Image 1 (cartoon, rainbow, N blue to C red):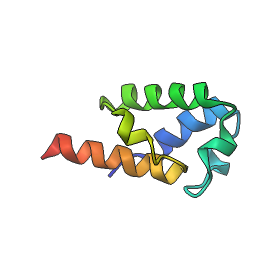
Image 2: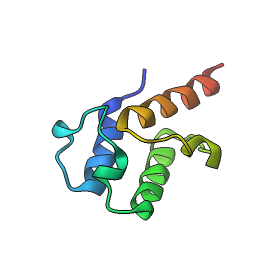
Image 3: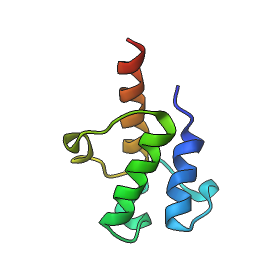
Length: 80
């Protein structure tokens, strides 16, 4: 299982919001100032979990929960 708090801390750091206020259904586009912040977030998460996102992985990424799900899927592939 993914440490959701680790992902939320990354979102919180880039958005300036406390991670306790973040929910899985919040839109990343509402939380992050611009597309560069979303790129920064994806880099931070990839480094934290030692995974790699492909561009196609990010196309449907809209919410904090989507990001958590993406990380979980990537980690499952590493375990299999």
